[in-house]
Image (cartoon, rainbow over all chains, first blue to last red; front, side, top):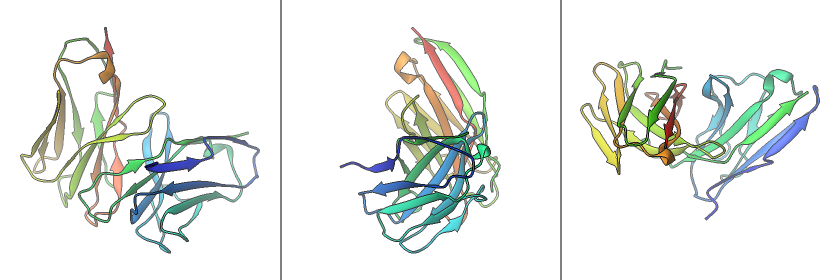
Length: 113
Length: 112
């Protein structure tokens, strides 16, 4: 049971390049989340999804897009990367029961030069 | 977006010491409070999900209490061990039950 898997683990981009981060979960969870983690800032929610085909904005959505075409996958896209998007990105998933914890992936370290 | 704060930001203790830290959150429209343990180079792992005022949960040497009326939760570690060194995150669930707002975390370092 792999849980939540993030791809890639590391990436370096140049300003203006685009890329997609993939999150896959094998727990049949309805809810999926993308966070970014910056020093001194804790985890901040970028976008989330409450089911296949749905997405919603979190606390810091600007500069990012997401898609949930399949229940098990949640994609985070950067259309035109900026240095301010240098961060560690975490994906998480949860059952559709409010009092359940979130399960996190191992993170993707992204550097924008 | 909820305002969740944790204190202290960091804490150094000796092996064997007991310690505690605080999470404060808005008491109005409270839904649930989560605690996670986050070791360096790993992903956050859930410790507790707490919902009821006065609730107390325990996992081994770690326990947590919840006061929803005044908007705070305490995490206690009894007899700290070096392997307890980690960042401890709390997060408050919004009243729609779909979004967590995390505090900045308390980084605990336990010296042998």
